[in-house]
Amino acid sequence: MSSALVLVALVACAALASALSSAPEQIHLAITGNPGERIVSWVTMAQTNASYVQYGNSLAALTQQANSDETAYVTALNGTRTIYLHDALLVGLTVNTRYYYRVGNAVSGWSAVYDFDTKIDVPNTPVDIIVYGDMGSTNSDRTISKLKSELAGGFSSLILHTGDFAYDLHDHDGIVGDEFMNMIQPVAAYVPYMVCVGNHEYDGRNFSQYQNRFAAVGRYSQSGTNNNLYYSFNVNYVHFTIFSSELYYSDDTAVIAEQYAWLQKDLAQAVANRDKQPWIIAVAHRPIYCSNVDDVPDCTKDVLVMRDGPYSLDNLFAQYKVDMFIGAHEHSYELTWPVSHSMYQLFPNPNVYVNPLYTVNIVAGSAGCKEDLDYYDKIYYGPWSNFRSASYGYAHLIAYNHTHLYWAQKLNEGDQGVNELWMIKGNATEVADHAHNFGYAPSPMRSDACEEYCFVACVGNAVRNGQSTQEAHASCGATCNCVDRVAAGQAELIGTDVRVELGRVTRH
Ligand SMILES: *[C@@H]1O[C@H](CO)[C@@H](O)[C@H](O)[C@H]1NC(C)=O
Ligand SMILES: *[C@@H]1O[C@H](CO)[C@@H](O)[C@H](O)[C@H]1NC(C)=O
Ligand SMILES: *[C@@H]1O[C@H](CO)[C@@H](O)[C@H](O)[C@H]1NC(C)=O
Ligand SMILES: *[C@@H]1O[C@H](CO)[C@@H](O)[C@H](O)[C@H]1NC(C)=O
Ligand SMILES: *[C@@H]1O[C@H](CO)[C@@H](O)[C@H](O)[C@H]1NC(C)=O
Image (tube, rainbow, N blue to C red; front, top):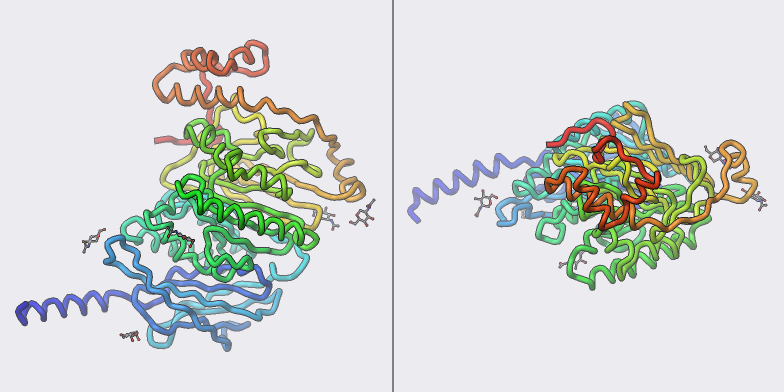
């Protein structure tokens, strides 16, 4: 190489290096599950070698300091782009206290000052958690702007994002991931942002973007798994068991077995601690019950792998009496009756489940992403399905105490109110009020799930493949024998259209 070329190369290198900033960005918080601890994470484009969190109880006195790890993470498949991930663990925080903090160092510069509080660390107090899945870097301002309003209104506890980030974290060599993490910073720098892996995190490198960017939730979790594909944490009355549905769709059965063994251990431990955390909530990205008709075979064949396959989640949830399973993946909202292996239980008041026999399943994948919404059929859906809405929104999950758990999903972003669920567990005295207020009596179980749902999926497919709805009904009726139901008045056709959309829907 001529010396002129070397010079050009050096100048180019210097230009590149100076373009890379060591200013902190993508700042977000997490919890470990131990009261009095917070994880602060952020990213710099250049190496800093030594960065810190400075924090304290007033803006003017950030008198405490915690070191951060710095991990070089290669975000581009071809190795040409590296970012620096920083994680710092704060310990010994006083509960029910506001903290102010900034991140960085004196040479690279400091971030703005953010703050958080430790109210959720106070034992035996209600905890209000915002839940959603499938939020991208486009079509998500509808949700992110509302989260900002929630914070402005005093929300300060915890956000749970149940998989599918950015669409996708690895796109454009990870630049989309950086953009997304900066988009959520105005929220995630103030409130712990807890996560679960989804199919969009599949990057051909073992979910490496997800595993690295959110590494700290696994590394510092109480469950000690040291990975964030499956881990667990307690927050007040709730034990969250987070795991990867994606392993069910890989060929590596050894990994599924490993996760399953951990799930058994974690849930057994959670049951042993039920006096402290009465609510056991399992979380993964894909649902095991869903009724969407536009995404076949998601809700017909795919769900069965997790539900009834060799590593059956329904078996596990029944054995450990898991109260609720939250999934997403379908870009819509669905609430089931308590259900196990398609056996389900009905309550006279659809919003009040008292001492349910089975796990309640929820699909909460409607925070907004570039793939828009998924749909339901107005007539045909899983018989275990209580409520469906193909509209954007997110939920509040509030664990009030040992007996009362509340869920409210905003329908059509709140324009159509909320879909509420009260789950109430306790002895006769504890639930008496609610028996009085709402009236309840456990109904007999039914197990006629299969046939109805076969028809839903079949018609959805046939219509998409160009059949008229009448043709679809005829051909699917022969397959599933559901037309007899319509004839018998057990189901209803609205005109000739079986695809009636709920909520405000645009489909491209
Ligand atoms: C960080 O350390 C490396 C290796 O010692 C050094 O080359 C680099 O200049 C340091 N960077 C900063 C910002 O201190
Ligand atoms: C690496 O990939 C990016 C695009 O993804 C491309 O712009 C760049 O030229 C590639 N670099 C090398 C050395 O292949
Ligand atoms: C993928 O990551 C998980 C969790 O960190 C690890 O246990 C597993 O061995 C990895 N798989 C491969 C193929 O590297
Ligand atoms: C539990 O919370 C519910 C809902 O706020 C309330 O109605 C009930 O009285 C509480 N139970 C106890 C024992 O505090
Ligand atoms: C029901 O639970 C309450 C505590 O919440 C307890 O005081 C009461 O003795 C229990 N009643 C019965 C019949 O077990």
